[in-house]
Image (tube, rainbow, N blue to C red):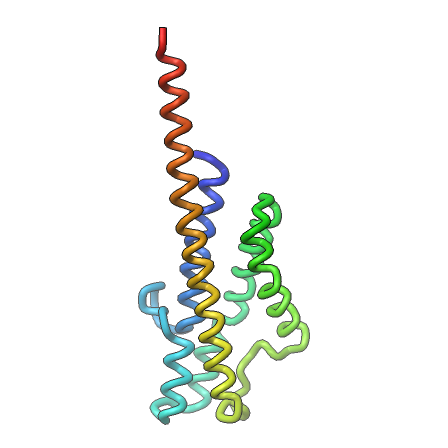
Length: 161
């Protein structure tokens, strides 16, 4: 199996997890995690959940999200895939900047004041991850097809008399 195909499979899985972590951060698997952060913030806005529960659900996976996104960006850099790396580098820098300034967690006492901003931030991040998902799917399919075409070509060349 090609290293590039493995990279795009890893990228596909990582982007799916990033979408899940961005969307909803406490339920079970990826499918159930699709809109958690936004759901938590909406539930908080309509007073269905208290601020402590909402903050703890969102904060539970922020570090995981940042680490996975950074690892994905680093893997694109190390494998010399410049386009995905250049797309992800500003977001990785922003995550590192938030982490270093200790502004990456949602504060329980400030959550109502930051509610609209947090919802917009999460919506933009979700749209970014969906765009990255489209790019990843395209590259994964393109790499798999090219790998199979190359194998068929090599098979035909070696079996000719």
